[in-house]
Length: 521
Image (tube, rainbow, N blue to C red):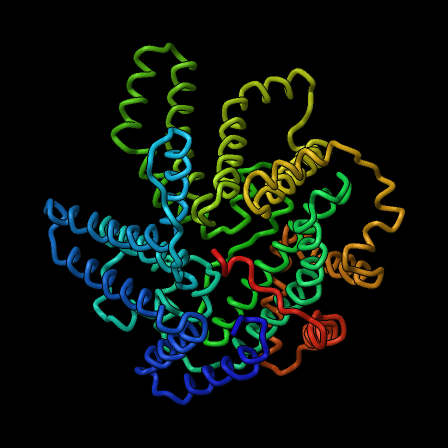
């Protein structure tokens, strides 16, 4: 029962909204929790025990810490115990075969008589998302940023709320506590805004992403048979597919929560307008980046090791060079675990690890070469704020993104490397003219629909990027007109999107449903 399916949209969601509304206010959290667990059960059935176990553990560890004084040494041990149990669970379920499998291969190389057979492990869906939310909540309670919640139902709803359980966003307690437990009655304004957001997500998923999946899957399955130009087309197509599907799913998730008056954090902010890798990760999968920043980057940056390095470099290196060495050393200490964790979070594969190291290398290199870059720009009299330089940065960043996603999509690092190498072998622009692309599962009409759909999304992102204040003003005006039951502009857009989905959406006879990509993480 994925977010874009008929059972969810026409049965589950309306039923949840109806029962939520008719339930007395003080019991509405219970109603949401029941529907959340029913939703999770539809995916994972008895594996729901892991979610329940995580909830009980997190709830009681946080209450235990809340009863202790800040100076009590036991508090740190309790916190470490909670983190160890949460990480131990996900490591055992998700990474055991990968770790022992690679140790077995190493033993074979070293002629050590030891081997490991992969075990059949059933992984509960959403474990990578709710585990990070649990760790973040536990850390915030330990640091005193939030008070422990003594209601088990509220803790369970925070970790298991049905819109976020499959693909996020990864929520912090402070992100949702104001609206998740408010138990407001259903409002027409919220229903309209929520439905509009869901429809926008369906447009991106069903019209663009699901079509591109056909081309992408065909090329990646038989990548050895295709020329460099086709590989480039597949890499670009996959990046667009991933964005349209993941951001579309976030639209459906945020819209679903919005029906109940619950606000969730945004997960995307026009990522293809990014100028640098750091900027890109502030726009792409935002909540994952924020989580790593808050719970890995910052703690490592102010750790004893970082402070010792800072003191050492300033003592042994003079002036600005000492500051530079201190900055780069601390950056390396903090960024490396962040990006290794980022890669591993996506899955136990070497291409994901490479994906994390790829961005670590680019971001660290950008920091290291920043003084040289600034000097070159000054010597050449190039204004960093000029349209020319910003355009150059955007194009450069798009190439970096497409390359990274090519490795990300591959079935292992070797496939990604082979495809990257193929780009420089027999590349010809004639491929885009001679009809080769029409042999990849899509016809001319499909490409026209994809191009028009992408242009619509690009135009919407363009408005949000360069006219954010005007966009917010328009939204406020629309909200006001909703209360007056007169919203001609937005109703026209809404009906237009619905008709586009019904006419051009990928579904019906002969259609094979495309699984949600990030649900696999």
